Every structure is written in C-alpha cells, then in structure tokens.
Image 1: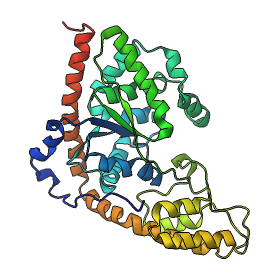
Image 2 (image 1 turned 180 degrees about the vertical axis):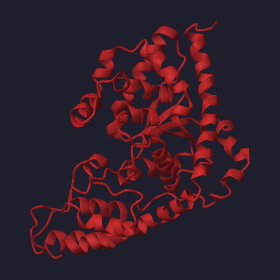
Image 3 (image 1 turned 180 degrees about the horizontal axis):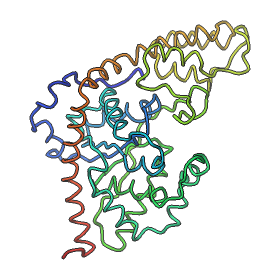
Image 4 (image 1 turned 90 degrees about the horizontal axis):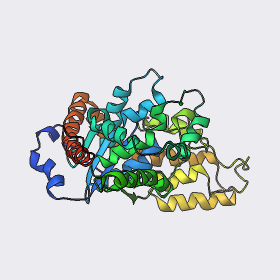
Length: 357
C-alpha cells in the first residue's frame, strides 16, 4: 500500500552490526509479539496489506519474533512436491523488503526450534479432540481443498502447534485482524486447560488488533494462490499493469456512459489502498458514478499508482536477493536466539509436569 514502511538500506552492513543492537529487545523487557507465515508459495498483496505492513512498525513498542511456519505448511502441503525451503528464503526477502527490520526483530525457522513440537505434543495430552474438530477452518479447508488428503493428525492438531508457537516464547500478543480473534481463542483455552493440571506455567496470549485492509482477488473472490487471482510481490511493473487490466469491475456497467457502483468495486478498493493522490481518486469515483469515465482510464491510473507504491519494495527486494546466503544465515542465527527463549520455557514446563530424571 501507499504506506509501505521503509527499512534501512544497509543490507551489506547488517551482519556487521554489533550485538548491542540485537540485544535491545531482550534488555528492555518489552512485551513480546509472535507471528508467522506458511511458506507455501509466493507472497501477494493480501499478505502485504494484511500482515507485513503491520509487522514492520511493531518493533517500535514490542519485542517481535516472526517465523517461517514450515511445519504448518506441511499440514496441508505434505504431498505437494515443491520446495518449502526455497519458498522460505523468498518469503523472508519479501518480509525485509516490506519493512520488517531483521536487526530489530528476530526472524527464524519454526522447524529449527524443536521445542515447538515438544510443547505441542504436551498440550495434546490435555486438550480434547472435539475442541480441535470445532475450529471453523478445520471443516472449511477440508471442504475447499478437496484435492488433498487432510485426514491427518497433523492437520487436526494445527491449532495446538499454533498455540505452542506462541506460548513457547511467552508471547504476550499476537497481531490479528478483528476477524481472526476467534482463532486465537482456542489457544487461550488450551493454555487455560494446561494450567488446570500443572499450574500457571505459560503466558496466555492476547490479540493485538491491527488495522487490516482486506483486498479481494482480481476476480472479486478471496485473494488466493489456488484461485490464480493474485498480484504477487515479485510481479514486475508490466505484469502488474496486465493484471490490473483484467480486474473485475461493476458487471452491470456494460458501457462507459452508464453510471457505475464504486462501493465494493475491487478497482476502487485498490485505488483506496495504493493511490496517494486523493483528489484523483475522488474525481474518478465521481465520474464513475456519473457514467463519465471508462474502465480503461480508471485501471490505467490504478496500475500507475500501484507500481509507484510498489517500486521501492521491488528495489529493496533486488538488493536483498543479491545475497540469498545472507538470508539463510540470518534465519539460522535468528533460530538460535529464538531457541534459547524456547528452551527456558520448556524447562519450566518440564518442572511443572514433574518430567525430571
């Protein structure tokens, strides 16, 4: 969006920064925020406006841990032969390009911190199966992803692994939109259930409500890679322009001189998100409602505005992707630091459960 956070351009020098910079988060005792993304493919504008544009600024107030949820990806992608690891590197390049500062947030790989799995297993000893079966997305995805076998223990236990992802770092807050608060509630319930047996060992996370812009896909359905209706963060200017020309608009408006509907029209939703020229947007809306502008002009100006907003991100991404090994090293080091926190949590958990020999 037009408010894409900026990040430092010191990609060469990031690895040479002192540990003093990295230790600010832990010494300041700031509340900890935890969130992650599944590396199932390229990131698109939905990820940008729904998460990444919020992730970057959070390090000003919180200690932020952001992870590549590769185990979560396997819950639905286990039979699909594509590289989760290459997706992970590519996705993290997008995170950094979108303003997530690796010097002020801990970026890491879920599977490089095995304590996630250990805590998820221990939670599974006390959480009833019906709690997992009632999660709305459990049945929804089984109905939607009919080309995959989702009748696995891993898929059913997804919410417990998600709970462990947060609790193993004493995560105080999880950044979510208001429509996702219910998903976090199961994690809170699971932790309360654990506390009934073993005492208050874990931190019960709270939702950190963040402003979320919800962009529809190019065809006005939910934006999803499986629908082929996304604009990806890796798309160049020409590709973005081509995709914008194909965007769904008011289906009742068969000619430019017929008044059209602006509300709920994806083209104008994208204008609101990306076009910083408010006067231009207001003029286009007024003329569209009056039947005095064609879709070609509206979409041409949208493509120009989007490319102007996305070009700084593309430039940073080119800089970041020059050194993929640096991203890999950054994630390995971040995983090492994250694991120190996770190991301390598991020491408390084992003590509470009397698992000492």
